[in-house]
Length: 139
Image 1 (tube, one colour):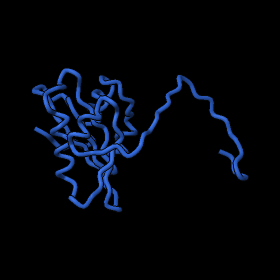
Image 2: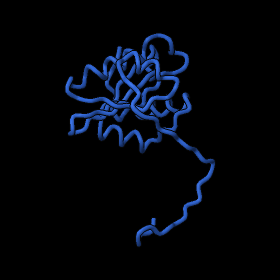
Image 3: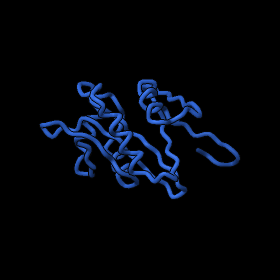
């Protein structure tokens, strides 16, 4: 059964994120809860085994993210249930957007999403900040 999570579930959501090698932090989750709703499934022990976040914007659009299903609970239809639930909680006039991984592409296409563009994510093992001047401003 899908339930609505709250900030008291952050510890369990962080564990799910870490288990599946996603990089959500506690601060990220507080931000998500302050601007949207988080849903998911628990197993018989009360552990969170799936999640999805829906953030609605005033311009009649919504972003769907944080779609995670624990590896040992995949292929049971949980992600499909979450996507269906997300689309039901949004009004029909809203445009829903998401960024898909290649693993989730089939799920999202099945839910009716269409590819409109691509995003690349680059990860570095280290970061050395440096300031540079652009149009009279330093960043």
